[in-house]
Image (cartoon, rainbow, N blue to C red; front, top):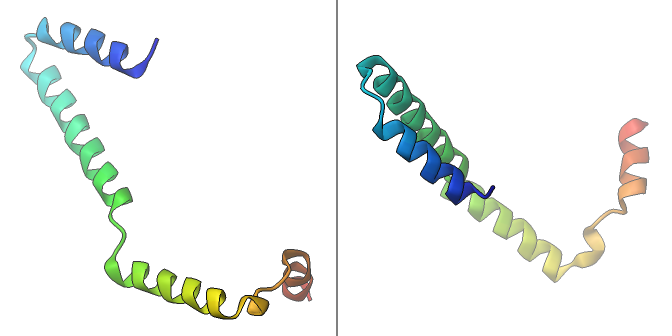
Length: 77
C-alpha cells in the first residue's frame, strides 16, 4: 500500500474519532513531526556558503583532494 492510500485510510479513521484527548495527542504528534521535518530541511546559509567555497576550491585545484585510503592511514597514525 502506498503512502497516499495509507494517509487516506488514516484520515477516514480520524474523522470518526470523538475523543478530545486523542485528537489533541494526534495534533501534537503532527505538530512535532512538522517541526522536526522543517528543522532537518533548513540548512543555515553560512553552512551552505562554506560548502560552496570548499567545492570551488576543489574545482580550481582538484589535486588537493586526498585518496580515501591514504587519508584513513594518516588518521589512524
